[in-house]
View (tube, rainbow, N blue to C red):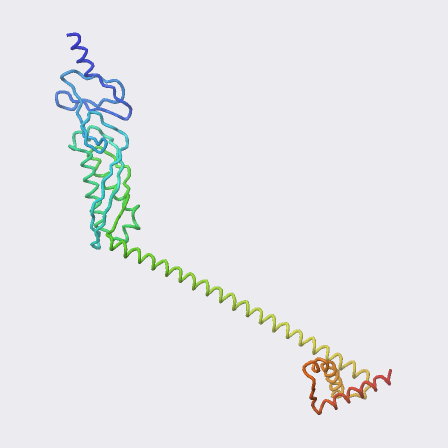
Amino acid sequence: MAVFAIILILGNVFIVRNSECMVIERLGTYHRTMQSGIQITVPFIEKPRPIIMLRNLKFVETPRIDLREAVLDFPGQSVITKDNVTVTVNGVLYFRIMDPVRAVYEVENIIQAVEVLAKTSLRAEIGRMELDSIFESREQINERLRVVLDDAGNGWGIKVVRVELLDIAPPVDVEEAMRKQMTAERQRRATVTEAEGEKQAAIARAQGEREAAILSAQGEKESAILRAQGQRKAIEEVLASGDGQLSSDTVIGYLLGREYLQTLPNIAKQGDRIFLPIETTNVLGSVGAIQEMLSSKK
């Protein structure tokens, strides 16, 4: 009897670990929830109510309810989009049991219920969207699925923390068309960028040539002004040296003759024979006459 009593007592002593709990029934009805620590039940009257949990990818019936955040991977499934494209989508969701009593009494298999709800919600959400918008709105889809699952899971005593879509695989022909479209778009962007660069370079060259032409014209203008000022000063000096005996035409001829004489050496370099116009002798004669007159005055 003593051995039987010891075995009976030990069979009703439970060590509940952290992040675990146990739902205890008394005569088939809910009595209490055992938290972490050493707990004792009344033999033949109280016993734990088991719950179906997922352990190593298998459904296991256990009296210990894990209160930690759990990961549920729902495998790839075919979903039809709004534009009638069949894609294969798989993902994961993270949930936590917040109310063990509801998780035990409100649903038969909580893991299976969450999985089925995730699949149906995913089909409904993807079915409202076109293929292109699915790839662009993955974060929004995750959040909307989380809200829907969390709202439905409140009745089962669970909290859906987050939902993540791992992969969205379109059909092979659609994927190939998308790849070609992406390549064409990148080539278009490269062409536009290259054309824009050539345009900017042409504008820069045109601006540089314009500025260079302006500077060159400005330099020629200033040079011409300086030459004209120098010639005017030379004419005034020659006229002043002639004491009124020289006319302006004669002085101009004199100056032209001097420039002509200074240019002759360069002309001679161009060939063996030099042909000079008839008027050249008159110019040279005026040069010699004015020089003799200026020398006699000195």
